[in-house]
Length: 210
Ligand code: AP5
Image (cartoon, rainbow, N blue to C red; front, side, top):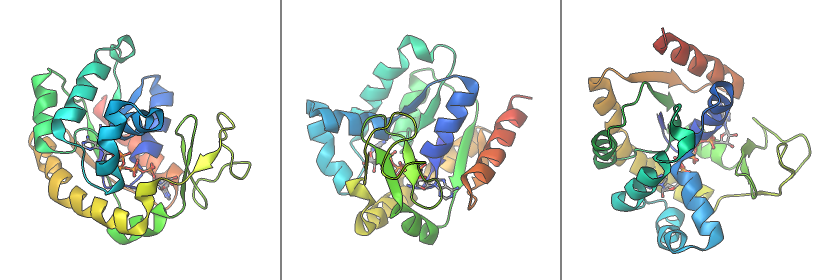
């Protein structure tokens, strides 16, 4: 599981790790954005929370995760990115009988995050995340993986990022203590370069696998 502030690099690392170990990444943020793009009831309900930088209610995201983890592709393991984000969500995961092998918290100071978020671009079709400076696409404006068009997330506006950081510190950060108490937490200091954070992340995973 990846924990960390918005923009810490959870999605970027999850993408790399899931390819390496051939397991799926389950990102509640990505699932909610998909629902918003499709205009489903879930998407309509989530939109106002997400665009204001608030958390979607626990009952909604717990339901999404419960459904998703029942799918066959999760049988050989999976990565959680962006879930749980509150103590009640972590307790719900425990109640589902899901035990994490490892919880990696990627730590990046708030000032760096605010600067970083303005350069993020996402693929409209496959959701892959890029950065204008730190992780650029080969061809400007086009996804390297599927050729899709890139867009800027509405919740990456600086004032929304500030609210998301506040929400992170008050509601999500307590999860570090929750998983520390279970002996599952490893802190990875987010580095300037994506590949340097990947090296630390993979070292933590390999160490936990013995
Ligand atoms: P979600 O999509 O989960 O957003 P988030 O946690 O705010 O995280 P981000 O996706 O913004 O950042 P990230 O850490 O994945 O960073 P990334 O790798 O993209 O959630 C969105 C919203 O959905 C929430 O605000 C909430 O409303 C709702 N939601 C989702 N889950 C929920 C839940 N469980 N409960 C309730 N509500 C929920 O990297 C960021 C940028 O930096 C990219 O451009 C990247 O290329 C670049 N970058 C990455 N690593 C580096 C590096 N080492 N150096 C330089 N740049 C880097």
